[in-house]
Image (cartoon, rainbow, N blue to C red):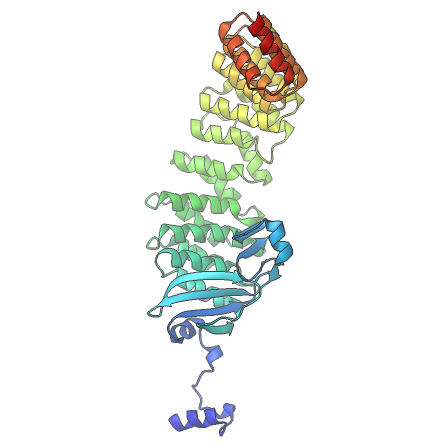
Length: 433
């Protein structure tokens, strides 16, 4: 056998004449090649999925606008100097006594390396399998860091191995949460999400004996599944009564979804009277976020009188303010004007109206119409932040004509902190008088 090997090395025997059972080095499993490499660092590279690029050293773009890495200047300047090159993905493994102790990922041109065993290009699926196998058995940061490059592999199937990692309670929490979040994002490359994948994530979310952060990541992963695959499960979790925590987390995940089923569920939820206060507040707040419509704001205005807790009312103010618009500003100002409301609620309504874009002229009219000094002080603060001429005019008028000492003092303080020449002139007049 030694003679045959020597003959091959010397060129005396054709390569094809090597005895059967001798496996070419490149055809060996990647794990075996890594294990067999000389002591020290090992690297390999593989094809990146579409949309993944980098400069080979310091940054990686995984999708439009989504970057990992470090930038010595702005992102735009860095991209101008060092263009984002599509693939390959290069993984550098640092080893001690042949055990992997660190995983580093790069995308882009492969540089010359010194003191590193380079295994060259390997099939993307084989690389993903090796990396996820490493994540499934490694302790600490190595397992977590092995997941990221696996998700960059072109056309590789990763979602079910990721779910298996997530369900393994013997693994570190960070590794499991990374697997769950990656599974949610990785599903976007599948035409459909297998029901068994959704069921496995739900099982993690429901397991009350598991780590709460892992469970929270599972709920979020359901919300991140493409094609709305996780929405029905989230609706079920949000609607169950066995766990208030799970209902709230399910509601929060639905809040971040633009899926029509999620939006309809949230609209129905704010009308219910059997939800926990916390879950109801999440549903109310959600209707004012990124997928909000004027109809959603109108619904919140209509249910506001039935909201009994400070938490849910604050959520309504925040949601309505975020939607903005003339109808919402008018409603908030009417609430601030309503003397039958608690003073604290009136001030919160005013603050929401200001955030919603209430015109200064309307705020001036409100000041003249109310007698609550706490509300007047809040209006003075709004005038001070405005910077508009009518607001400065009103502050000067308050300083010279307001009878309440506290309100007047606040207006004087606002003028003292202003750079407007008229403010300084008004203060001089006060001193002279």
